[in-house]
Image (cartoon, rainbow, N blue to C red):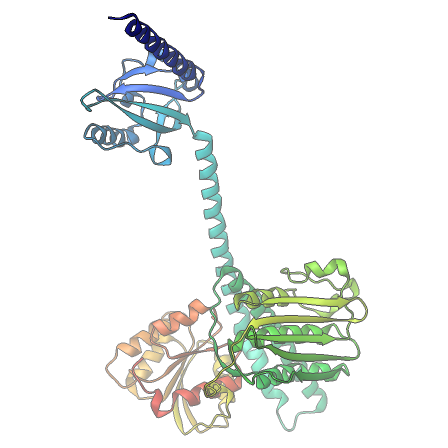
Length: 529
């Protein structure tokens, strides 16, 4: 051997020695546990950091890794080791988290990052892995998971509570609002009594609006609102919305104006109901907070971006600059303390913001305290090029032919109200106080339409509808309309799933009731449910 070869061997040995020294220093200095075990799982080396897990290195060497593993994890360890011997590369990181018995007997979670060792022929001889204590991280993750589950349960409980509260409030409101309206229309009623009846009706409607706002806000927050774009007449929509607040404005001596900018398409593709809801919220607020002067609804259109622009201007009390940022938050009312008598629960603007953003738009406000405010929003609304779609049947002047109607409701006042609302029409009404009685009546004689309450003792409305649909005759295809204080989208979907054709919300709107009966008692409506 030449001197050159001898020098090369010495240098190579020195490099190997230095490399080994560096790796040993790293292993002995690391806070994570480094262990090496053979193909059978027998530990051959453990770094000094074993003390972190309550052991001295010599207490681990010579024993199998399964001696320190949790019984529930050891089968996975054995499967992993067998796969490694068969040539499958082991996975590290989160997928390789197992429990390890601490020296004090407790269990700690470790995350392993293994590397396979092979001999010169490529055969697996063992594994080197770095075990990191991830107990604290796992505990935090479990806490976050538990809190998320608690939050989800709280949201579900709140939704159920809101649905129950809504139902319980809407049910008596049906009688309050309905009978107050009938009373106010009596020809021989004294003026003072008519005034009282009108006030009862308006108060009931206000309470119903509050319940609706709370439910709507819950739906928007939960992402349960679905858009249903349709071709609408924007002029009609604005005029209808202004007409709703006309009486309140007139009672305060306010002027109400509509201004539609030239070039605004008359027909637009947009969600009619949600657009109307936002405009009404802004108009209602404007009238409420304007003691004198007037309110103007302005409509424009950005053809370049195909967006509808709506502004509601008022000459009201205005908003302080520091309060503007609170306007669109839930339960927020930023008026002065002496303005709180104007009412409301502070959800209208929060709902409006949620709906506008759901439609892909934006909403804002410009205001000067003591001089008035301008609330505005812009939403995508492509101009409609085809024929206008017909307005819903219940919005048209209804006309009812002679009918046989089955009326199902466990609350007698509700049945009396519906009979009174349908009194002017040629309708023969059969009453049923629960679902079982409704099924019996439906099996005895044919009806042209069934009005079905949902929540009733014994057999509920949906169970009754399913029974009627299963029967061979005589009302298997008769339209069944739910009339219920259960108004959540899930409630309406459940009605359709039970075989019902439509849904009428309580408190009952007489025009909607008559309109939907007229719609579903046409010849075309008698199709299989």
